[in-house]
Length: 66
Image (cartoon, rainbow, N blue to C red; front, side):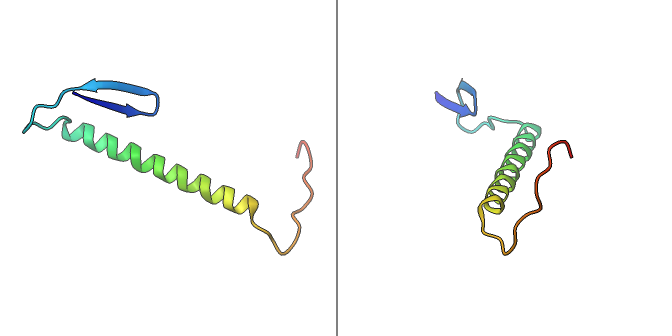
């Protein structure tokens, strides 16, 4: 018995040796989800890096309601 933790979901699963625990469709869905999350994390890291790096000139003034 293995504990599996994915973000806020925890589940106990049993795997019989020699059998695939997931169907090919489930594996594909999981791969797409992981790739999407990795992309989101990279985008967020780039956004943080851009927001904190020094620039050669000042940004235009921020206007409320614009």
